[in-house]
Amino acid sequence: MAEPKTPWLEVYSKRRVLCLLGLGFSSGLPLALTASTLQAWMTVEKVDLRLIGIFSLVGLPYTIKVLWAPVMDRFAIPCLGRRRGWIFLTQLLLGGAILSLGLSSPASMPWLAASLALGIAFLSASQDIVIDAYRADVLKKEELGAGAATTVVGYRIALITSGAMALVLSDHIPWRMVYALMAAIMVLNSGFTLVSPEPAEKAPPPGTLRDAVWQPLLVYFQKQGAVEMLLFIMVYKLGDAIAGAMTTPFLLELGFSRTDVGVVNKGFGLFSTILGTLAGGGFIARMGINRSLWIFAFLQAVSNLTFTVLALVGKNYPAMVAAIGIENICGGMGTAAFLAFMMSLCDKRFTATQYALLTSIMAIARVLAGVPTGFMVTAMGWPLFYAVSLIGAVPGILLLPRFAPWRLKD
Image (cartoon, rainbow, N blue to C red; front, side, top):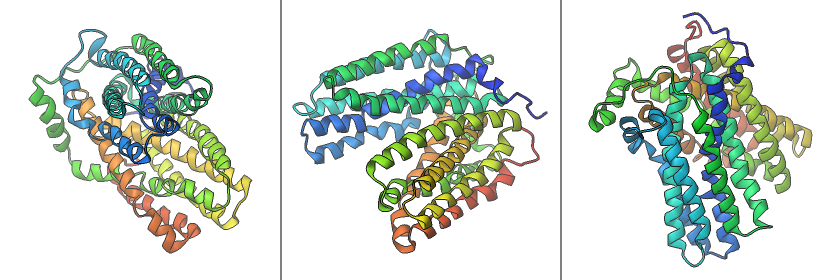
């Protein structure tokens, strides 16, 4: 197949790519409302810290969403197509659930609030399943990177909206009005679903629910090297995950204030990630997924060394800004390429189930990667820790020739 020659920026002008900005926003909006923002509300209401800790369990549906993804592959809502019908329904239900959570009282009725938060997490995870499937179904091969980047940008903007903006608003209006506003934004954002195009190629759904459960697995594992591919998915961003797990403690121990960390690491870091994902999406449209995976793998690895330099320099604001900017730009590029790669693996008949499986595998590696980092820092110190974190990128790079050959023009 000839190498894509889509201009770097033109790919972002496509309707099916632009609409993913709104769908990504819809995907990200509920997360903080059941996590950090809800924790802030409970803290203000003087809820027992032990109970606040238990509330973290409401995020469980995000980790096990593959269990009900086959239902969303098999059945379709009788409007707006196989994917958009589910997306629109979950958006409306999320609007109602978010409003209900805002009308509850975490202090006097904590278990009702917990039930509503769990319901929001379930609906949000369900929405993520179908948005991911829709994105993989609707995009052309050369648009996968740009589509992934646009989704990530919308997702990040949503996290600011339901996180930082919601907290600022809570200083001026009651919490119930904050949640009512977020519910209204969710419902209004469903307009993106209505104007999003249907996939040009409409794959038939599985014939039975049994087929929806087993066929995605059978089809995937019949591929040559299917198990090793899962290993590649686990380790491609391993070095990035190891370094990122300790960023906040590292910056605080260097002597930077919490305001410094919030403004630079969270604010400027977010901007850098968005810039990186957009640049990565345009690069993928031009160079293809395979070559982008190679280039971004090395950039991600080398970017970890900027934190080694910062650790050696000490508390230095220009060095801090440079390290965070470079690391987040390179990480954003790698994310765009990797999401595009996983979408390209999915069979359009079972996109919801297969993509949910692949992202779950990726999440396992990200979670486990952070476990030993504290012990590593204690034993090595910060400069050596970030230097050694480069080793985490080696397994993924070694597997690139097999699963993303440079000479294979995708």
